[in-house]
Image (cartoon, rainbow, N blue to C red; front, top):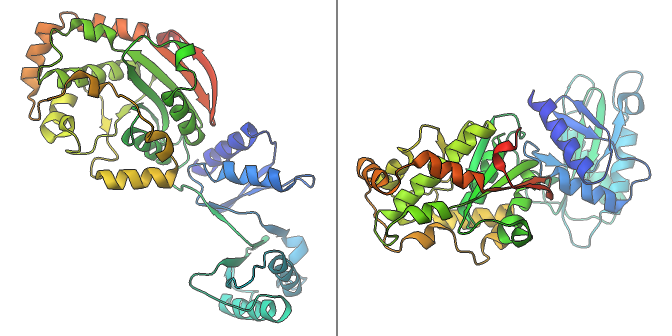
Amino acid sequence: MFEEQLARNMARRISDAGYRWVIDTKRNYHLIQIPEDADYEDIRKVLQAVSEVHGVKWVSPSVWFPASEFRREDHTPDYELIKKTTLKLADAYYKPDAKFAIKANRSEKQYTIPSDEIERWLGTEVINHTKWDKVNLRNPDRAFRIRIYTRDLFIIPERYDGPGGLPVNSAGHVLSLLSGGFDSPIASWLMARRGCSVDFIHFTASHPHPELFENSKMDRLAQWLSRFTLQSRLFLVPYTYFDMTMPDHSRPKALMVFRRFMSRTAEHLAEEIGAKALVTGDSLSQVASQTLDNLVANYDAISMPVLQPLIGYNKDDIVELSRQIGSYDLSVEPYKDCCSLIARNPEIKAKAHLLQEYEEEWIPDYDKLIEQSLGDALCVEYRCGKKLNTYTNTLVVEE
């Protein structure tokens, strides 16, 4: 199931990049066939697309031979073919003063010589017949990999790491509370890497308008995330109705009441779109609203599971991870999140029953408040890094 889903996800990314290349699913790997008329730029674009697909450990342009071309009549590999191809690639990839290594791997042992013998033999051939003259087996500048399978031979001159994890759409549907900072985009990315399909909800200080939202930070952030989630919706929900119900935003409890409003609204939307859990960028005690007492008081307001992949990370860890996955430049742009606009001196040891008393006093009809907020929301669809459609009524958008 995972392999089939991964193949579908790769095909979607490749197709969205404008190519119709065939994917052949084999044991332990997928073979993407490069058409004869493809040029270097085509290959580079497909490599980039596939290397962003969750579930891909690594991807490589390689020279491939089926068994009919590299197996002799006695079933042994054609070592002359292996040598000739490796030397040709070594010539093409040579760089002065660079160090190389040969790394061989074989899935069956009966008809092939040991891997370490292949490595020593080919390494000697490269030194004797090319300009390469420096070897580093632990940390080479260029590794030429020889992979001999029963029915396939691959000679691999370079490879690109993928994100690993599980293929998106293999582990259920979640709704992520997305802000403009560092934490929640990474939390969303991590849940996609564990196989979840991810939609987003973001709370706005005013009623969202498509023309004002165009190319905003949140627009670009959701668009970037969809390169990894493959297909996502961003629900922009105004909290103006909540604002009108609050008598005093300066009270210490106001922020926690607001966070419970966001949690309740997100849960309601999640149920509408079929998501089974919420995702947040909470990091324990990183800010006042994320103390243990406040987290408990916040999520006491809902019954849906809340996934918090960053709960044990500190800020330095999170910023470094944003650099690694590529969200740093977007996250570092100035942006006023809704929580920073509510209260400057928030409570740090909230109690759920006290917050509920305030809610009963300040918000006489909670269901109506959520209905009004979602009724004025904006929904934007993204696929593989591109924006598709915009809807003004989220409740009619179905899976």
